Image (cartoon, rainbow, N blue to C red; front, side):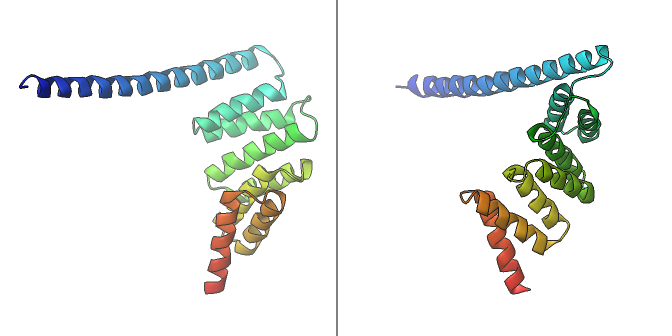
Length: 176
């Protein structure tokens, strides 16, 4: 009986260390995969004189996920200038990502401009509309934010984030 307590502590310690090791290894592999993808795209774009919009967009998206907003914006602007971008959904994705990059740097006027451009390309782009509403909210333009959230809810009634923010803004305007 005296050996059971230390043995159970040891077993618990091994289980906890094994679980922690699993999560650490998983995160290392995920980070390595992202870094490799970023390096491959950078090398590809360096070797080509004129890269494809998709490559610039993917590189910019990876940089946004790594919170490298200045570099991401440069890549996304190159995607906009690429000859093969075209109109519609691809352009909307690039404009939305640019808006996100600018919003992350608290440059809300530029973010709003790009979100609106994304919505010109794809009028029912719920993610861009939600991001536009958030940018309006951060700029203290509550009426425009509420209108944008309501538009999100008209397109996607199950959008919980927009529902909560719209409800909050309605309460805020009633109190004011």
